[in-house]
Amino acid sequence: IINYVDRSNVSIAAPLIQRQFSLAPLQIGTLLSAFFWTYALMQITGIAGWLSDRLPVGWVMLGGYSLWSCATMLTGLTSSFSALFMALLLLGIGESVAYPCYSRIFAELPQQKRGQANALIDAGTKLGPAAGAFVGGLLLVHVGWRMLFILLGAGGLLWIFPWIRVMPSS
Image 1 (cartoon, rainbow, N blue to C red):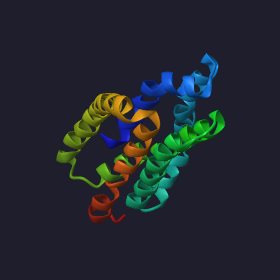
Image 2 (image 1 turned 90 degrees about the horizontal axis):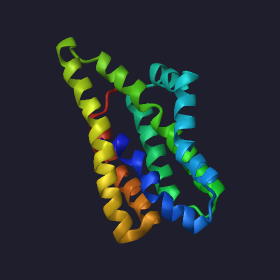
Image 3 (image 1 turned 135 degrees about the horizontal axis):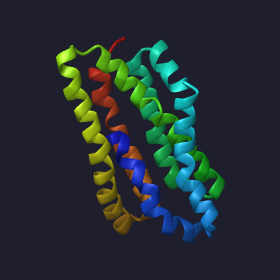
Image 4 (image 1 turned 180 degrees about the vertical axis):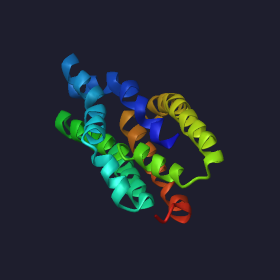
């Protein structure tokens, strides 16, 4: 769920970001696609998979998660189109390791538990954007677009502590 919460927040905040930075429609389109360019590039080139295959998967997931949470916070701290674009590119890099890491973790599960684990991941891909859009909309109205990203990134970092306690060692 956490991996997908931020997927809709740039779209939700886009009108306010566009107004604040006086962005043209092409620039908004560029921002809306930035995450997906680096995410896909890391997948297509095999870098995300290579990392999860060659390094301890728990630490790869922790590194990716830390990067994407910090990039989410940075998004709220940006002062220019270029900085915002770079933060979203970093977000895509960080999130790109999630699925390869899930696959590595699932490979260690007993075969009779893999279907359930995959179903839970798939549910997270639906619940995350739903929760993100709902919470993002509430935060946007009450604290503005910058605090939306800062709070989601900082809140996401709270997941690190339980993850360190339960993460796989291999």
